[in-house]
Structures are given as C-alpha cells and as structure tokens.
Image (cartoon, rainbow, N blue to C red):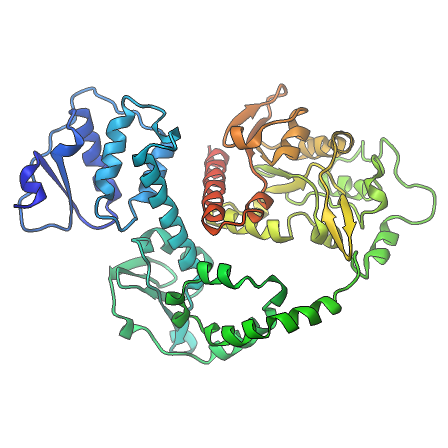
Length: 487
C-alpha cells in the first residue's frame, strides 16, 4: 500500500518544478480546510487516477505574502521529494501563524530556509562552472555545455544564460533537464547522458592561458576553494588541470607579486590630482554649481569641490553617472580605491557584485543614475594600501548639497539607498538598514526612498553559504526595485 492510498486527496504535479500546479491545488485545498496529512503530493505519477480536488468556496480569498510565494517557488526546485508537502504545511500554518517565517527556531522554517539556500548555491555553481564548448563553425556554430546539478534548477536558471549569451546558439545538457537557446526561443528537453557532451575545443587552450595569468596566489585559500568548487565540477572545467601546479607554487608567486606591488596611491595619482587641483587660487566656492541646469554642468562644477577636507587626499571628485531623466537613482556611500583612480562610481569589487545582481534583476544600468553620498575617497594609509574609512556626519552633510542637486536635476520617481551612509544622507538621520531593508520611506518632499544594503556588505561575509544567502536577499531587493520602477 502506497502513501497516496491512505490520503484523502492526491495531487499529481506534471513535473518536478510544477510550482504553478502546486500553488493552484494548495489554494483550493487550504480554503477547504484540508489538513496537510490528508494530502499526497505526487510528481509525474501515471499509475493511479488523480483524486478529485474540491473547488475553492465561492467568494473565499487566501492572502499570502509575496515574500513567501517567491521563496516557496525557489524552495520547490529542491530535490527533496517531501518539498511540496512541506510548503503546503507552512501555508496551512500561516493562516493562524502569520509571523511563521520569522521564527528561526521552528523546524519547518529551518528546513525551508535550508532548501532555499541549497537551491541558491546550486544556481550559483551552475552559473560559475558551466563551460561551453564550440561545435561546428561559422554561421552553424553552436555551443554545448554539460553540468550536473544537485537540484531542479535548470528551468529557473536558464533565463540567466539567455541574458548573458543572447547572441549565441547554445545548449546546456544535464541529467535532469536540458536547456536550448537558438537566439529566438528558449526550449527544454528531457535529461541527457554525459556521453552527449562534446570533447574539448580549440578555445580551451586560450582559456587555460588566461586563467593561469589571472590566478592570484596571494588570495589563495585552498579549503575555501574546494568548498566553493567541489571536485565533481572539476572535470567540466578546462582550467582544472592547472590548479595543482598553481597551488603548489602559490607561496613563491605571492612573495614575488608583493615585491612588485606599486606604492599607494597609484603612480599616476599625482598627475590626475594635479589636473583637478592646480596650485592656482581655489576654483571652487561655496555656491559653485548653483546655476547648473544639467548633470554634465553639475559634474564639471563638482571637480573643484572643497566643501569638506576630503578633497586634499583624494585623487579626484567621483561624481554620479547616468541619464538626466533616469527612472531611478541609486545612492551608495563613497568611492573606493579603484573608483578614486578611475573617476567613476561602482567600478571596484562591490561594483562588480552590483552589476551582476542588476543584470539578474533585469535592471539596465544605462537607464539608471548611480552616485554616492560622499564624492571623495576617505581612507587610512596602511603600508602600501589605502583602506576605506567611513565618512563622518559632517562630511556626509557637506556633500549632501551635491546629492540634492543631482536629485533636483534627475527628478527620479524612486531613490535606492545602498547602505546606512546613503540612507543618512537622504533622510538626515541614522537608519538601521539591516532591520529596515526592503522598506519604502516617503520623504517630506514626496521623494520615495527604498532601503537596502550596500553590495560591499556581501563581500565582507566569509562563510560561502551565508554570502550566497545575503546575495540572494540583495537580488530580491533589486527585483522589488525593478517592479517599483515599472509601476
């Protein structure tokens, strides 16, 4: 006797990721007060006729938070055969326990969050370790990759590869499901065998050369690398044969690299600084930029800003970038070392995280305006490095004049505060970002401000799983911003 023989209702889902089928059935069942133990959830079953499910009572409504629905869809991609039963049990409980998701010690919540994190890690690994191999040439060129996921993530992850490799015809083969993109349509076919994957192609020698040259021995953490890149993925990576020798020679390579490190700031710092801070009398005054009627004119005026002492040590003013009529303005804290040298915001490590998450959230960076609360790099010299130092309230207040002018000229419908410093500059007071993230605050002048973390926070997390979980939360924040931009 099987489980569904003992249950009042059997719900047959069409495939392993049939979240829509689960949601429709779960809604009707919970509105009819059907308890979790009365339901058997079966995927791809054909041996028994499906039980007749009750219709939703007339006029009945089920209110569920959007956060739960989005997270449940993520968790439904887990390979645990009991996942749909768990999701229904949580839905059932939330009718009387509205704050269930906030009870971190609850066994169901802990299991749910573990599934969500596992799916997120698997998606991240697929994006990191898929390697395409070219088959055919010229107009018939096609790229094929082999990957072995732990969970049912291919359908959820495929749009990322469509966005990243739009101009290629490609297939990603996995034992669970295969995804295919022909530059027009994304399609799926049943899982494949490893023997279907192609052998090495001529581009892999070039990739191995590139990888060998970008390998940074000073940042090598062998245990962390093996945790982040399990050996099961090595056979799919063309660079894998290089790793043992690179690891073995890492200590000597690191000592050589440190010996060649440039002094800080960069050698051309003085030339760049001299261009912006000539020895002639000060070009900037307290009202410089008041008459600017465009971002371009305001940026030019800000080159001579001396509203606070930070200009003395910085290479140059790092002003905002983006169209005057941007749909949204994103405000960070201050430029970092790389931004200070480049003169552009969000181009360093945190900027790369920011760009990747924006792309996944389908936010076009070219259509938004990105700036910082403070326009000069504040740092402490430490040996040959310049270490970021948090701006104080006086520096934030002094630079708020420029930020207010940027907002006046861009006239955004939405402003995103990336971190506590940005929130303080925009709202005039300290804000507990970790507690209030995801919330929208309306300023007295009617400006809507969405609160979230700064992407640099993700980089400071050492645990791989925690880092991925925080990145997933930041992605959900950006998806919420995308929805607000469209509304």
